[in-house]
Amino acid sequence: MQPSGPGCRSSPATLAYCGGRPQARPDVVNVICNSNDIMARKLTWSGWGSSFATARGMAEVDLCAFEDCHIDSFHPYPIVLIASRIGRCAGSPRAYLRLQYVFVGRSPFQGVPARLDMSNFIVGARRPGPPPHQTVSLTC
Image (tube, rainbow, N blue to C red; front, side, top):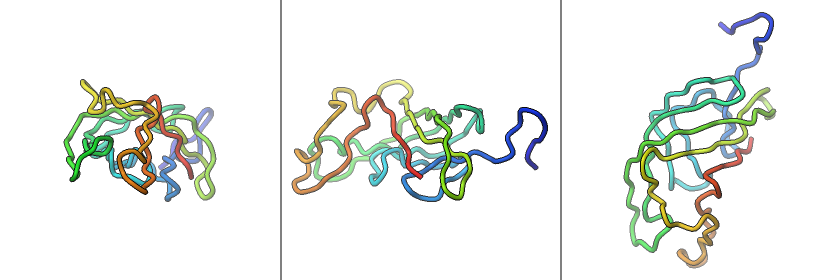
């Protein structure tokens, strides 16, 4: 049952997700759209529905995503997600449209340039590099 009364919002918030169906309090978030380089799992959210919400969980990170590796090399890292900038999506009245992420402790991508051109690593492929400032704009 949704809370009601002065100051309460009648429609639940969702997380816009890479053009897919927005979800409320997702337990898995693909941090970089169209890639599985950073996949946040086992998320526990707080502040959902307010101007920003935070989640703690574990990220499966492909360490070879931004290096010259021959095979994927996934490793777990603690991660915090911050969803903000509530806007409107078709079919979902309110959705968070911005996602920031922070690795707890040491970042697995220390030393990787913020605006890395992935065409240097994968011939003929256009893969997204790590987002500048660890911030992702989400699309509905």
